[in-house]
Image 1 (cartoon, helix red, strand yellow):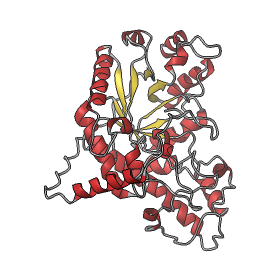
Image 2 (tube, rainbow, N blue to C red; image 1 turned 90 degrees about the vertical axis):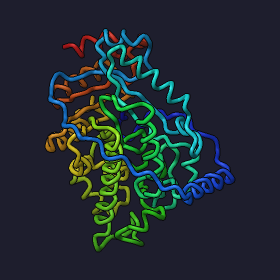
Image 3 (cartoon, rainbow, N blue to C red; image 1 turned 180 degrees about the vertical axis):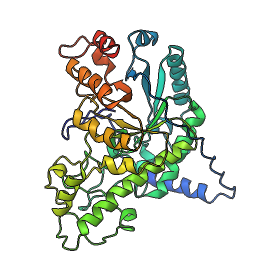
Length: 399
């Protein structure tokens, strides 16, 4: 969900126990058996009809949970929407095995929210893959020093395209089980569900394009970040590295679009890197010493302007994950408005004071945010000193 200050990161869920080698073999055997079956593979469903962005009106405000029932009290307090947070690992605990009880529980929750008049934003949870998928060959990102990404980074879906059908099957199952009546579907696919390369893995100078799949298409084979780049290798590498993340973004949008015709929201992490700062990093050979490299924003691929410019779907919204910060929301809203795309967002989950709430409300007006989610509903009702209260939320959102 929300973003942190200058490289600080939010809490993550605990991860799974160590993997066993024989489990990997079993998974690979099962996948091979499926691939060799004589039955023809079903054709992909046709793309869903793409709807135009909604006509601007009053901004919609919501809260993110865990939420307290009955949900009708949320509506009375001014909350009109919430985020349904899913996790792929919970939905598919083993290859080919679906947790039907999990889907049933989500359907029940969706029905209760809708009955209370709360719109549901779907967070697919594709960025939280199951252990069996993370154990597959090529499932993790690798940097120039051979460091391997952690579970938090999700699957290596940017480079290893052989893994994409697994994620596509999960998304298809999700919409088949839960339907398509969502106000937005959020995509990003990287750490914390955002469009990013790994941020909390590796070292400060890690560039995540050195697994076998990535190296098979590297335009400057043999060159590595931090080495001399007299022939412009760093700039060529960086363009390729960032364009690959744009391609992954568009694959996610197109895959969701096969099932969902409404607005798809791409999550962009904290502050985008201006093109001038990218040039400085390239001039320094991507050694990790440029200002935006020291915050890992270049390595994470946070070229919001490039990614937004690459969007070809008219029904996409740009989601700012640090919308109480002026620099962050401007880095998303500027390129989005230039493309005629709506902007939506949330506050940082680490910043939930009344001042943060008022800043967020000011940015709703200044940047024409269409949907705003206040992260950490529990802070609103905690009574904790220094935190915005539910009464504050009601007053500010109705002003």
